Amino acid sequence: MSGKPRLHYVNARGRMEPIRWLLAAAGVEFEEAFLETKDDLKKLQTNGDLLFQQVPMVEIDGMKMVQTRAILSYIAGKYNLYGKDLKERALIDMYVEGLADLNELITSNFFQPADKKEEHLATVMDKATTRYFPVYEKVLKGHGQDFLVGNKLSRADVQLLEIILLVEESKPDILAKFPLLQSFKAKTSNIPNIKKFLQPGSQRKLPLQEKDIPRLMQIFH
Amino acid sequence: MAGKPKLHYTCGRGKMESIRWLLAAAGVEFEEQFIETNEHLEKLRNGGSLLFQQVPLVEIDGMKMVQTRAILNYIAGKYNLYGKDLKERAWIDMYVEGTTDLMGMIMQLPLQSAEMREKNLALIIERAKTRYFPVYEKALKDHGHDYLVGNKFSWADIQLLEAILMVEECKPDILSAFPQLQAFKGRISNIPTIKKFLQPGSQRKPPADDKYIANVRKIFNI
Image (tube, rainbow over all chains, first blue to last red; front, top):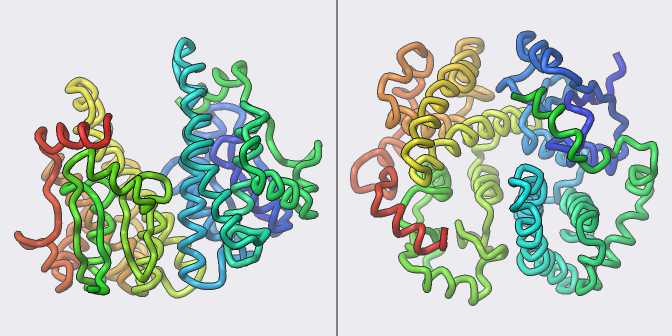
């Protein structure tokens, strides 16, 4: 038994990707068991490995953890990426939840009807530049520090970088009006653990392709 | 200045209800400012109080907190309802996320067409009976304690009671196959702060009716 966390999910970003990012940023090596067929999921379900019959599931420290937020909170707490006290935690949570909302908006684009996709994407990009990114730009401007909370790397920074890169995949110039987010992106990408994760061959997953959707849907439905 | 937390939301359950439950269970008195019009919401937005232009907003300990989970996490942590260590926290988080998913499904119902509502109601009942309630039934049976985690009252217990009552509003006999949950419901409902919150006249909100939903649509432009 390796003692490394073991991630159970499909070979795609989905709801597991923020967990991969956080473990990588914390410098924690992890293994992955990919669900390739519906039977793979059924097997986990009948074995009683999935508390609510769902993935993500992460085997970590003797627990079979489920529920993305629970898993992220545990990892952040364990590896000191969750602030130093309740108030820092509160700020981190607010920032992280905002990013999670933006992430949902982006990933929901795949499930829009074909004739609505372009319009939906435009709305999402608009929200990114008017509702979300200005918040983080302002936070960084307000204290002038490298990290969002408490002058120290936290899960909020890791997730902000993840989302910036995700949005850039749809609109490469999305940070044009956000100079502090641009330098945040550069600095945070250069943190050794994160730099390593951003290299080809890491466990970071590729963007979802249209052709993958039927296969993935078949596993879950 | 009162020093009491101040909640900004519509006069209905929505995403604020779990926050009301948690504060009430912790014995924390709170004030509420109800948003009745789109103008009121826009005023909050333009005033810069809403970090992401959204409610719930809770003014607490000098912060203008938004994002339901952030608010709930903070209250649970502050009032010692979040377990004694990381692992107990992990279990509480898992249990809470499960009930959040279940209650989230119920929350959507009033906004759906009659046809979708009927279909989803059946799905909710099925999920409650086969996916969610068995988990909590088993947890209580396995350790035989009064509370879900660490033999101590926590956020997980409060949210489970909230979820049970919400599902019972959909199907009154939903707990017929869950004796542990029936006993749990009885016990937790009798905790003095919770008993008080369950009485008429408390700040607990009723289920959404058509009039409320029509107003919500106007306020939020949906």
